[in-house]
Image 1 (cartoon, rainbow, N blue to C red):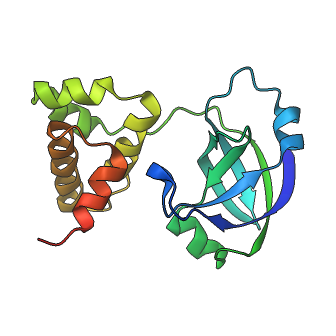
Image 2 (tube, one colour):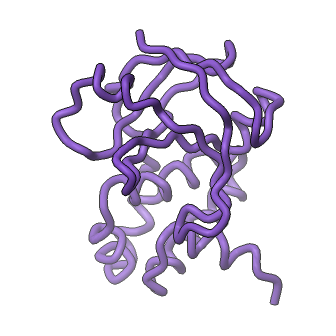
Length: 168
């Protein structure tokens, strides 16, 4: 198990990461992981005794990795930007969540499916998680429609989410 303490940060203006809340993974921890490539990977463990799994570590251009902290985890932690957190983790080798409903619906829309399949697997996973985490059938159906519309418009996940926030 690996562990470190760090400060919660937030990106100002940084392309697709604009507004993300995140923590930096220290370089000494990255070296201990002995990663064979510079690609993203998932971890599971605890952050201030709050359990998490399937948390993604993204490489940054500066040569280190960041861990995005979503609103759900921030709420459980009760912490915001500037707060210190303790992280204990192991690599998470479990498969990414997949929404079979999304895949079934995409199969009925060849153009949208082709666009979806052209995305990096990690980017497909954003959409899968978006659909998979919907609590009710109506919400899930609405999210599937949003994803299919985004595929027709050739939008990435961030563009889709920002587009949904815009009021007509």
